[in-house]
Image (cartoon, rainbow, N blue to C red; front, top):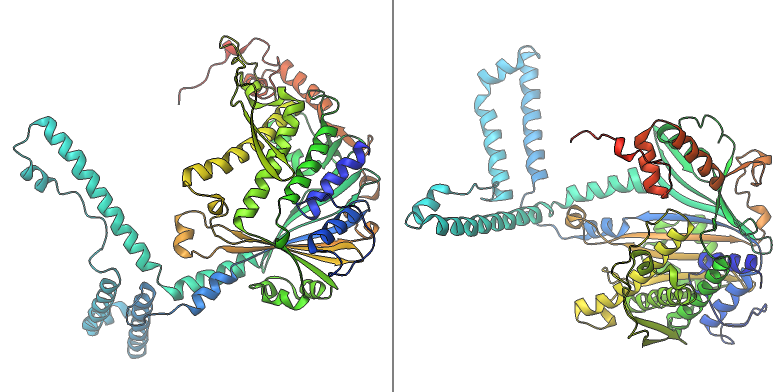
Amino acid sequence: MTLQKMTCLMVGASFLTACATTSPITHDNPTPSAMSAKDSLASAVKSQLYHSFGYQTDVYVSNHAHRDELANAPQDDSVPTENDCNKTHDDAYVALLKKARDEQGGKKLDEYLKKNYSQEQQAIKSAYQTCMTAVIGDKDGYEPFDFDAFYQQYHALNADEKAQAFLADTAAHVVAQMAIDEVENDENSTDHALNAKKAELLNAYLLQSGRVSVMGSYHPLKGYMTALPSVQYNAKNLHFSVNQPIHIDIKAGGIYLWADNFALANSQFLDKNLGDKWQNKWLFLPLNDGSLPDDFIKDLTQAYLTAKKESFLVTPNESFDWVSADSLKGVPFLVDNLPQATFATMTATPRIIKNELSAKDKAYRDYVFAEVLYNTIIKKYPDLALEQLLGYDLQTMERDIVDGESVVTVRNADKPQNDESATPQEPKINARFFAVMFLSNLNQQVQSYYHSLDEQNATQDDVGNDTGTPSLVYYGIDGGKVSWVSQRYYLKNQGRLTKKLSDVPMMVDVFTKIHQDASQTKTFARLPSHLQTPNASNSINLLDYKDEFLKNIQSGNDKYLQTLMGLVFGTDVLDGDVEELEFDEP
């Protein structure tokens, strides 16, 4: 298999299912009883990956669960809320103003109220204060530390003893006030009417008005794929849209990015001489700038496919199941969150496969993928390990995945550590640097999986997302290929404010429609026809541009920019003038 085909299969496998298979390719359409759901999905994905297709992915974020919780939450009408107090006060005062206006005709209304309705005003004020006292009780704010009481209690102690007592008492006072704060926040969070209004506004003005989508096409035999990520916001008086054309060309060995979104920032902050050189141009970013071995991309692709295979093997067979179209209506809020046309497409599919993973199984599957991919690459390219970049070994214990089983092996236990006198080279920002960072991230994922087990002193059952919700994916199978993919995610609450508002996570539904005829997907239709396909004449090689840019920096007199570029690229653009720089004191 050529590198071109392998890399396209890698991208396609990740895009379609987030899992790979080891089953043989079949082009028939077996019945559910003749083939298990897991094997059928494997066959459909493999068949799909060898053919061109177009795709449209839409992301739908919803707080339906939160709004439903607020709508059905029991309310104690006997306990007023801050919103109730404000509304009662405002209604009473407006009624008093209208009465005084009708009597006085609107002239010198303040004086008229003061003269004739001072008692009524005071009654409204007193009622409001009484209501607010019932809301917050006696906890009406932060109480200062009582220094007089402290000195009266500890006057007989010496200076050191007083200092120790002061630290202890003030620390206890702060903790007590924080506890009061927590109680007040919990009481305020019971204002269901206000929280329901906030949830409705969030849904109307952000979630429903915003849109995130990606469209593109996949061409494994031609060795390229396209993507057009887009973010939009549409409101009554505001329309905002930004997109970024992306063309991944395996034949050329790099990624093309449409330059418009980068030109302004580059000309404003870095290259003052850029002008309009990037107008109507693609930026070509080579996957290998010469700092990596020639076969690295090929080996990375093969390792990626192997990791997907092993992670699929450890996925429990019972997590896959055939389901009916009617069962989709039972997915919480799926009908409400997806457009009607999208849901109709799903229910019209003749065969649907459901993959529901527990938090434990998902965490283990992700661990297996990261472990296999990391160890496979490091075994062949040990110089890409982070410890090589830092100049010392991080670990001598390695783990292998064999047919879905984790095997721990100790290697090089007697190998001496690197010479402490050796000085690691200053890293340069190039393809090798990013490859090392990518592999380091994989290793961190693996270590995090085991650290979670150790820290929680528990089994794998406790490893997973904090919400305790399973990973849920549906696949529409039509004609032996994947017709659509629907994924359900839950956003974990982040931060104190969000958690106070609701413990119910937001739902994210990601729906991908697969078009078997890739020619129907015009990814870059808004670009001029001669620019829709990048080539040497309409693109700028960023490696060549970098060399030219650094030469201009070196020959210029911007010492601060020279320093920045020298630190980033590890080049000689500083030209020995660092000592001449003078930085202002902060």
